[in-house]
Image (cartoon, rainbow, N blue to C red; front, top):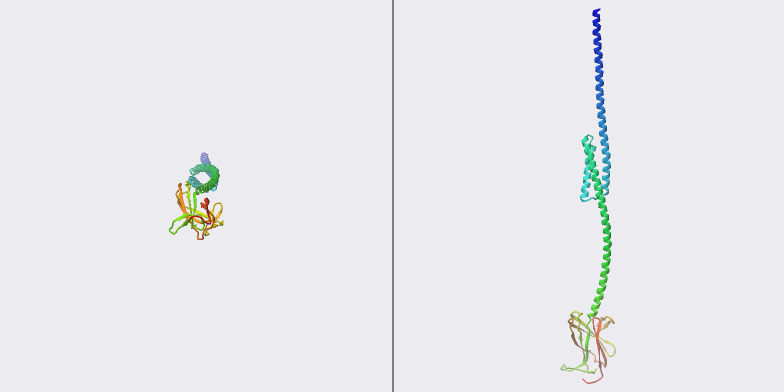
Length: 315
């Protein structure tokens, strides 16, 4: 009886030990499994957080990038400092895009990308404000330029009108000066002369004895007429009322084209009187009657006189 009771006690101890060991194994298995599940859950949460951050960064980047692209597209001809800012924006976009596309980007990389997006947005807003400012200034300059063009057009018209007025005034003044520069003949002498074989000449009133007519006059002082050669035209009209001429003519201011008998060139000195004397004779014999002498300068008649030849008389 004693031996049997001892064996039963030992068997019970082994069974208890085995039960305890089994329970301990299951407890350890359950603990290990729970630890693994916690790790998996933590990794899944971390992955979801990273994806969510990347998605938010991507969304923020897309908005700012679209704003930047629209700004640079609508202002494709940026120059100088604005062009440099545009280049900086494009470079910053490229750096942010590289981080976002990197599947192995760390939290630090993504944090840097977020900061760079803020910087990009600031640069875009700054460039937009500068462009708007320049557009406003350009609009003001355009208005000012239009006003200047209007004023320039008005000044051009005023200048043209002034030039026309000055031209008309100058023309009128030139005409007055031209008229005022016309010389005047005074002390007109007309004498028929009979010339002897020895060259001596005596005045005569006889048409039969007249060999030539001596015409003399004084060109009065004129302070307007410039010094130099002056053309003097002498027109002689015979007793028959016809001009005596060899066919040469000149233009007068009031009578139109007219034939002249003689043309005399006088070296005139401004402001001084000049004495003029020349002899005129014709191939045919002089006829009885009146010989009218008219003197012209600058197209105007400046003097005239008449001499009469008779049928007979003293030398």
